[in-house]
Each structure stands twice: as structure tokens, then as C-alpha cells.
Amino acid sequence: MALYIRNLIDRAGTAVIGIPVIVLCALQGGWVFSFLVIGIILLALYELFNMLRQMDYSPLMIGGALISITVSMAFTVMQIYQAVAGIFLLIGLALTLELFLNRRRVFINSLITLGGVVYIGLLNSLLLIRNHPFLEINGSMAGGLLVLLLFTVLWSFDISAYVFGSAMGKHPLFSRISPGKSWEGSIMGLIFSTLTAFIFRTLFLNSLPLVHTLGLALTVGITGQLGDLVESLFKREALIKDSSRLLPGHGGILDRFDSTIFAAPSFYAYLIFFGI
Image (cartoon, rainbow, N blue to C red):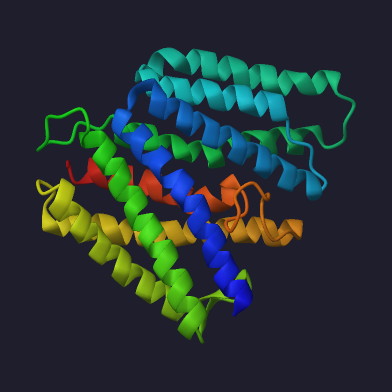
């Protein structure tokens, strides 16, 4: 019980610092939000590559970072097609580096590098959401509010699933990958995160139809949990508990944003598919 309370305190302390930063940057938008996303991507990529090194792989740190930065900047300026040639060039340069490194499993290492960049690069969906022209709101903060809706649902799900799962969880959700997660925590997480989405919509996004509020909340809750499980699978294979110890109570940046990696592109796909 004491460990449980201590973990909650650590989580709360990290949230007190992290949440205002994300809120302010999301509302500000532009390069401020882009730099925040790029920073998160680079830290998450570093943690992922360190994890892969513990599995005896050798991803290209610098090459992967350069590709990630280029992709994020392309999404920021919204000139995707103009940046494609530069991205492909950097991919070629990153792979060319293997010519000068005397290492085993060159092909595998190259594929792992690009795979890691693609996996973590899904966080660039946050930039697309921030720049999304929400139909019913003609304000510069509309995209920022959509980003905050996404994070509000994720945070609410994480907190409620953790609290209720710890207090009443009896049926493992996926014991082979993450024994600590339960069906009880997952269901309560979906319920409370959906309620939180409706409250957020009432206060800040009342032009968002109620049916799409429900749809987005369920999409984020379900896909976010899948993202968490996928990262747990990686950590189990690497025989580690956390991706790093950067964030007290949460582990590393990758631990904190693993659910966002799946939830953000799903959120954006929902907006596009339903023409919101």
C-alpha cells in the first residue's frame, strides 16, 4: 500500500510539471508545439534504441534522429511533398553509414532503425491534429483544443484504469504481456475517459457533435491501450521494467507516450474519415 501511495505521489508530481507545458504548447501551436513534439520523439527514439541495444541490435542513433527531425519539420510546415525527396535522401545516407561501420547484421540493423523511426514517428500525428481545420471553429486554438481533447482522454483513462485496476482488478487483461493490467481497470478507464471527453466537449468544444465525442473517446481509449500493450511487449523482450527513469512515477518518455503513439494517428484518421 505504501508503494502504491508513493507511486501516485510521484505520478502527480510529474503531472504538475508536464501537463501545463503540454497545454501551453498545444494552445500556442506553431513552432513552439513542433519543438515540443520533436523533443518527445527524439527522447522516445533514444529510449527505444537503447532498448533494442539490450536485445543485441545496433540501430543507427544519429541517422534515425536526423530522419525523425526531417519528418517532423515536414509535418510542421505542411509541405509534405516537397520534403519527400529530402526524407528519402536522409534514409539513404543513414543506410550508407553502415558501409563505414564494421558491424554484424547490417540489413537487420538498418531495418530496425527505419522501423523505430516509423513507430515513434507516429507521434507526428499530433502535428497534423494541431493543424487540422476543424469545420465548426474558425480560431487558431481549435487544433490545440483537439490535441488537448486527445490528451485529456488518455490521461483520464490512464489515471482511472490505474486506480480502479489497483483497487479492484481481478481478471488480467493480457497476462502474458502485462500482468498488472486488468479488465476491471480497462472498463473503468473507458467509462471515466468517455465522461471526461463529454465534460471537455461541453466546456471547450461544444461544436463537436456528441456522437463524435463518443466515437473519439472510444477510439482513443481502445487504441491508446493497445499502444501501451505493444510497448510492454517490447520491454518484456528487453527484460526491463521502464524505458528509462526520466519521469518519476512514469518511467521514461516512451512509457508516458506509448499510448499516444497509437491513439494520435487513430484520432486523426477519425477526423479525416468522418470529415470533422
